[in-house]
Image (cartoon, rainbow, N blue to C red; front, side):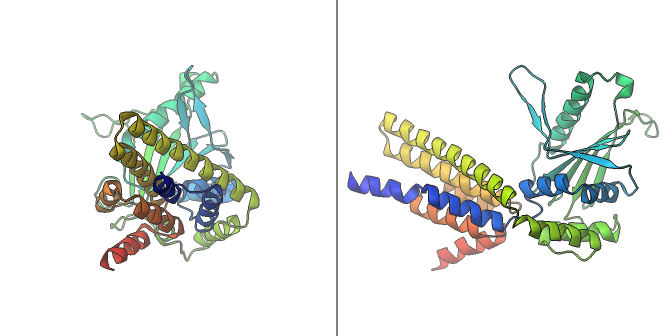
Length: 321
């Protein structure tokens, strides 16, 4: 019984440990982290406007940036929470989304976001002809389509007559920081470099980098981030507890271990996903690991790492010892 409790203590993080993890994680946040991306663009409309103009390659009217916009249209509260919701004065609506991992459902997500924004406008009394132009813009670290473009822009047109546009004023734009073609201006290339490395050369990227550093000393943001982090960790812990309870109910020790391991692996992958794309090899290795002590060590390593590659190097060097 004593050994059993001792093992559970090894894999269960204390409140102080989780708090320390959250604080260390906040100190290493980058602009590509969803939390910082939203906060900076919401608090710095000049940066948001310059970013929209950079993407569209044209000037736009003065923009108003809403707080993280939640659109709930159903009786059971189902809806979406948009990263950065921007309204151009008397003109377009822009939804800016940061995407650090490749997900095949991205096109369908853009369709869903578009529909929800339109329904939200109609709900507020707009007539069909009053629906505003909308741009759903994803900033991707990896190529979502695999053709090497830095930018993919989609709008509805007739298949039989390619020059005939539908004219519904809806656009989906996917930016690809890993593009290989010569299809965007130098300023955009520098922005992509900043997304990938945290370093930039233009006045625009230096302005963003300055805000990233300023955020590290923003006590209110730090407290909010740590609260969210700890809440998420608590929810994962509850999931692990359910896994243990299920295993006990079935009388299978392997069920308990598997439930805890799945929860721990999920925590590691959640943290790594904020640092960049995770290779299938690394993902499979984490998800297949059943050594609870090792998973606990990996979680602590993930919190301190600033990139997925750094984490991979750590666990590779452990294997070679």
